[in-house]
Image 1 (cartoon, rainbow, N blue to C red):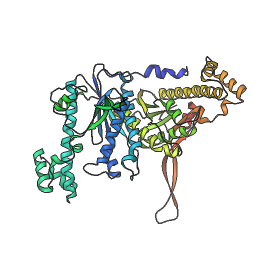
Image 2: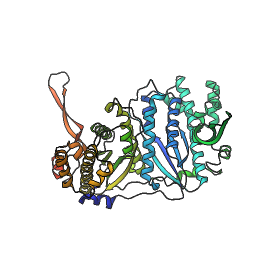
Image 3: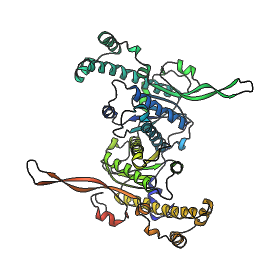
Image 4: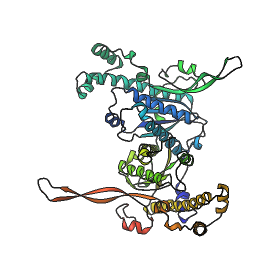
Length: 517
């Protein structure tokens, strides 16, 4: 909106990275630190059926939300989503596809947690990373899915043996040693002889994973005059725990993918990730998707809802705590930019993993914190956020980028303040737009003052300047052991501020970004 001197940071550094056409796209979502997450929440071993059902509920929601996804396959804390090869979802922009899928998946996971674990409090925000891989034909798509199901079988058979041994009294180290070098038949014999378990009788959800697709089902559309139901074939998202390596499933579901027989191990070579250039500062910008509709559904105040802005900043603060390599954050409305230090090696600078995990964690924090900020408002719609990664070689450009975003904040908020004041005074939205068309900043200030006796510069700084988040040094007094004297130790905390991001700010805060003048 703002045509400012800082906008060159957009023109010269932001590029669309589009996935190649005529390729099937697979987005694979994987839980971040889910070994720890499952331990904290006391998931059953080797499999927690409620956790698996929660995962396929999230996958079902994604297929219902995004029609271009034709199939999903999941096991443990992982899900793969297959987009049809001709998809133009977000014009095949990788950052949009990745961040939206993983954000929506995370949002559903947090919102549905209580449905599957009514007696377990969510102790920390779950989050996921994701990567997008392109496959040139249906043969490789079949083999990719076969590869994932083979992995499901291998891992589950091992884990079934491992946890049976541990529960029988062996240490984890002893269980690993007992299974070292064993083949599938050895593990089956171990289960049968020592624990009277027939591995083939284990639940299919554990052995075969979960396949999510649209099934043709007959539904009653109406009742005729004689009371006879009239049925039609409809597609409905369903979950099955079946073999997808052999041809039978695909022969019965030819409308999803055509049958193909190929070795599946070679599909791994397609999974090459883009690495962001070294010695560049990385900015991850997260933006709410369809938040105009979201704000209407949840009756957020116009032009600004202070509580919603504080929720965004709280989520951003948790991001700073989760990712030590983030040195600064700036946000307004439903957007936040996070600056990673130039030397960061987070995920070895793999773009898809950085983007998806940040988008997922931010979403998870937003959903888990909702009740704290809106105790009397039910979350009626799953919020989701898209993200993109930008690289800047110099600190000066980082400062210019942040100034550009703050200029956007000012221009957008000044316009919205005028617009909603006009609407609340009785003007229609179309009339308000027409009145403000072509006006400059000083015109808007005059309009607010003359018509509404409002001095724009007296509006809360949070609305006019946005929110910046950074770490500051604090001292905590700790009592010395065995004595009454206090010993000061250095600590850092995360601070939220609403100030101008001009040269004066950086001079007063030299520790935030080294050598920033």
